[in-house]
Image (cartoon, rainbow over all chains, first blue to last red; front, top):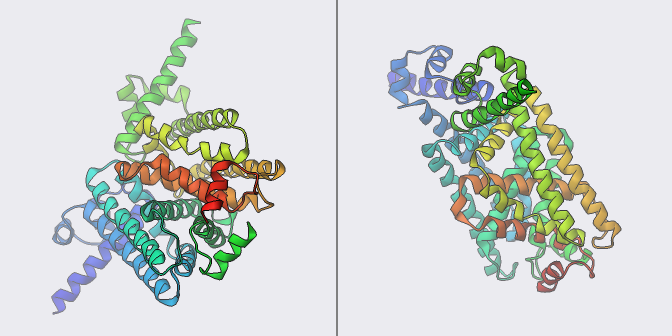
Length: 211
Length: 211
């Protein structure tokens, strides 16, 4: 049992140290040898836990995406209509800016490597598809509940994913340029405004009335 | 004169080779020694043209941004109203997918490095501010010409920049998932629809009528 605990600690330590190295120096510039040295472990111990540096990177991303999923589910459960749930998701930007900047650096590094490394591209496609499916499902649910007019939910989902990615990148590089949560909220409201039926959320109805 | 021509050729050759190396192996993993070897030049020749690897990277980005500016200006000059000009800019996504994928890889690498290296962050801020200003100026011009209602042009500009960034990243990682030009067009139309006055472009009026 003690041995298992030690093994779990080593696993966690590798992830922590690798996260630091990837964020500070970049994925390409970080070698397994450096991770081992910083973690104070042998290469044998490293390869007991991970087949390659690549797998550490993917596990870090997976954990980050799990955190995001939890955030989304929490917001979804706290709101009523689908439009309100989507608008409340603008808060994710604030949560992200409060979380470890390291995580966000690794997120950027992930897209960067995905465009270059076919294995990482496969791993990047999975969450992108998942988010496209997730938001398409929400739009479909909004149509079903009568909040939205019939619409191509896949395209709207791709627009929402694009907004999310673009707002994260902008807020990372230019954190003080705006209240990024407010910009995100406005972006979602504007995207959804044209979709709503008259009995949708008051905030969206307001945008329609402003027209 | 011959000497000057040779010097210009070397300069161009460094940029070409470095672009290839950064795209294939990544910015961090590429050293000046490798660029020199691939370009068939001495380190002395390299440092005659560039103070550091960093400066090659920045010049590549600057050239890429100049190409984008030219595209935007062409589209602007070929359209009438500001809303129509903004919608036509969705074509940029198609132009980008037809240009060298290497350029786009370097673009991703740029944001990645910007989040890590303060000097590159400064260099990344400049074009981001420029595009925010550019689109805010267009929205203001749209208000002035009577196409848009009075609105916070800065926020709309940040939403447009976010869409651009997010659509480029998605289309790079997932090129076959959608007609990305059509998605971009839809994204811009949806963002602008709530802003337009009744006498704005027919396409936007259509979206308003669809409501």
